[in-house]
Length: 133
Image (cartoon, rainbow, N blue to C red; front, side, top):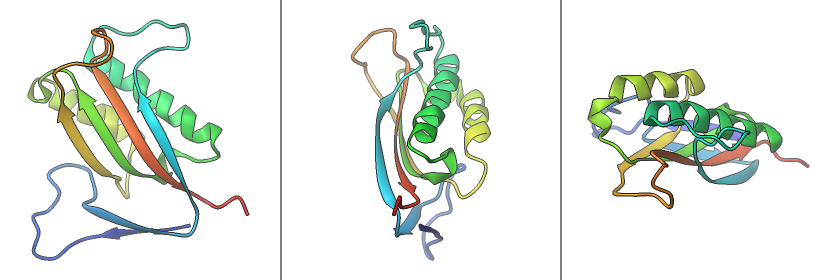
């Protein structure tokens, strides 16, 4: 599987740690549903930053169970139920622990609500895994 980070000419540079485009060839695609901050015991932190920490770790575990790693992620969508500006630095620190280089393409959306009012953070992903063949 090959990942090529595309650095387009004539377009503004990324405003944070993300890539603007990634070309993938070979390998298998893994589509991961929205992951929230539930702990294994069914409890959930009450703050968005704490939920993000658990959700990113849950995402890591999903990737590992499929034979991949966080480095295989090429696209993430992040949904936040609170004002990002109020926790920007803390959320970027959490993300930086899981994405250290060759950053995935990303979208961050502030939402009016989730399926459960206790949810404050959700992340979904697409990963390009090495082929099993």
